[in-house]
Image (cartoon, rainbow, N blue to C red; front, side, top):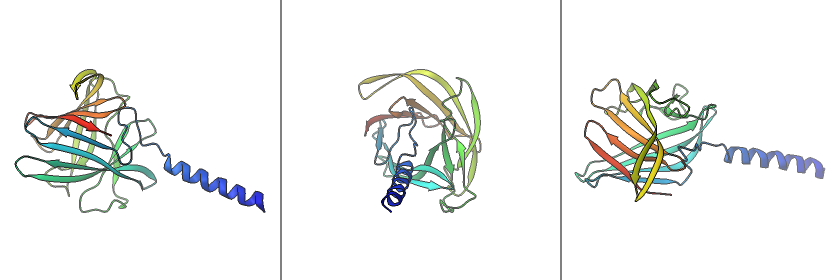
Length: 203
């Protein structure tokens, strides 16, 4: 009887550990529950990425991340993203229109950051329309460099990956993101507005 209970307990513990340890962490995207990354532009506008929880979506474990923007003009916005890791170790993102529940089986994960890509490589993906969050647009992401140097927080980050993200359905929605190993996104630049957001703090 004791052996039987012991075996059941081990199975439960292993199951709980497996679920808890399902790794959504990636060297160049090390987001974790309760983590927070803060960015600020020279205008004083801020972006905060807060990792809220880990959720299971259609048999895929993902991190729920809230992206909040606050601008000196008084315009504020919030959006939720769901990121996960595929079998190749690349970053995938859930394409979920605002009018659908997360559990809707028509929602799909699409490749976002391909860390195994070569510099200059591009891929097509899908995400929501930034102007109408009920719509789905096609995006093209290009890995421009794997060796950029970025100065933020009084530090020098080398060998950063530089991605170019463009919404193919909108003529003016393009931006760059620089990603550093063991830190994550350290800089974002909106091309159409020529505004840079630099990492100022993370935990």
